[in-house]
Length: 481
Image (tube, rainbow, N blue to C red; front, side, top):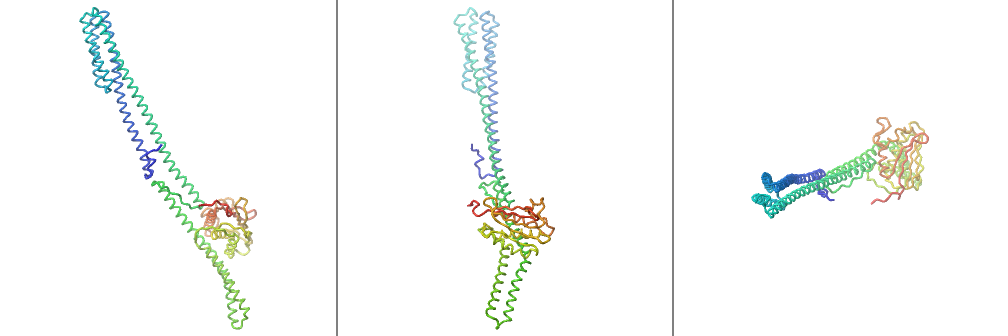
């Protein structure tokens, strides 16, 4: 069933609702007018039927007084018969003015003529002294009376049939129009509900995905209605949230970079001191230096320069903002780079160790995963309030098929049970005021989600906490177009 408003893609939902309300109202109005007209006609037909019933009774009274006159010859019976004839003639005239049906008008005209004939024959019969009248005249009078009765009954039945027909038509019309209006209302409600509820369902699902860090825009329908505007506004909000999250991640990187700077300066100071010492020796031994010794000093200088370059390169890689991009990456190298960047920030007495297979290759954005490990390592170091302690990173196949597990475990103060489910919430921190923003683990959670993985905080079997990262092995995810 195709409704008019269902094929109006250029109308807004508000306009479609108005059209959907106006059309049934117009239909209901037309039905009401037509039904009212039928009621008027029905009222007229009922009046005519009542008049036909009275006419039939009058004619029967005429016949009754006719029989009395013929049996007893009383003149008052004849006079009463004439009175009923005049009453019937007046009734016929009134009906003739109200009847519109051609067949009924013809029947009334015939009845009027039969009344005239009956009156004329009755007068003739009276003139012939009633009972002494000729047999032919009596037969003619009886026949005229019978014709009047038959005609009045026919008119009465005709009006009754018309009344029943009008009632049946009115009932059928009201039933059909009622069904049409009801079905139209239900279909309109379903169409609008499906359109609106579908959009709400899509937005609800997208909101849940945004809460998990997946900033995916929604497909916008071609219709120019409120649903399109809401989805476009939602997509603008999604893009803005994505931009701000990336900005927040970059700011968090710079914040972490500030924490690392002092340690990096210390790391750079060692190769620079070595370079300075080697250069000073070569300057002092200028002209008298053994070529083999000079070559050794120059080799040391080159080695320390490469070491300084690697430190600076790692720092720049960490701080650089770039698009998220995964590719097959050895995990051991990412862990080693993270260890190198945080090593100067780990207090003495805390040991860093890793047990990562060198052949474990995962689809990673190396810079982002390095950021994850740096956040977890720095948090672990801060959790060990009183050295000695240890921080261990292990990796290998997970119990879940197609997944790898990375475990970062420390021997710190651990995480209270009531906080295990909150540590990844934005701005939630258990650190003292001024010592944490509550964004590090939230960003870690978002990065792991982008890798189609998961991260969970657990209490360590002994003392401390452990974070378990699960990432898909290469080829375990379905390819996306």
